[in-house]
Image (cartoon, rainbow, N blue to C red; front, side, top):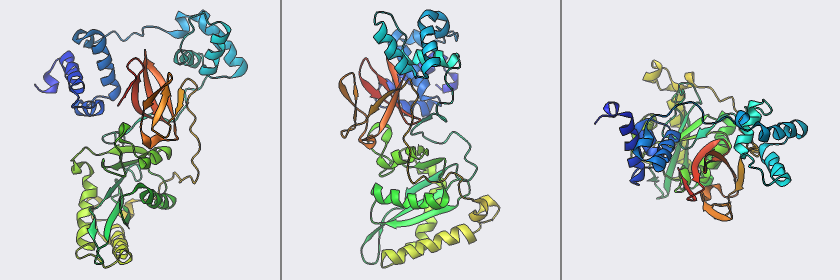
Length: 382
């Protein structure tokens, strides 16, 4: 039955079945049904609590308002905030120590109440991402809104050495930013090449890659050390669908021309091969007409990004009501004296957790939501 012809409850139940089958992840089910991951989590939670009937529409009126339902418990926090300027975590700890018998509200409730009283700024962070996404959801028709990156299939040079061409392209202008021959697909050399490019061209808003190494890993959100570095640079991570090269069609078409003009036949050494790559980049950008630009070359439609590459990345400041945890060398965080596996890609990094529902926590790295933690089952999914 087509999606549009199904009842609302049937639509939601189908999504629940997809995820519960174990065949579809939350992200995959959300992308296939064109809904957000947050919505899928909401339906799963409702189904677990009340079955199919709980998937029906509910009244939109809020169940409670912290600043109105318990003013006698919230007023002390307003006064302490005005006096000391502390965040919700510190305020709640002080209140519990002073009177542990009272049913003090949670940190997130305190923070919302402080915000409603205009005692904290709403602009705690620039924006929230969900990472990684299947495809960009914002406008990508301007230069540096999105870069694409990929490896053109390896080939042997005349001296039998393997060459792995790393290519990066601006999506909107089709400008070929880089083609660099490497000895392998290790993340370290790729990061160095990209850092050199960032210094010259600035930082894009997002990068689209496939799900292979070094762009993606096998752990939570398929993060790799390279994609974690992108997030630390405030670059959003996008990925193509498995086995779907058409998701990066512009890049794939450029690769066909790259191979034809630079690898048939290949050069005898990496240095000689790199000269051919550089010549192709120059011709592709400066000389070759492009149909999408009215037969003008991409260079006439590209300009460097305004965001500059920082040689030193500053520590991220999470909102005051977040629970903070440092990821250890095994890729785990401590939660109620137990170790929960996150991903080795985040070893040494600090993640933040925000309670978004009763016993449900959103796990963030910087401003990107990576997963949800159910503290009852101690499972991290996403």
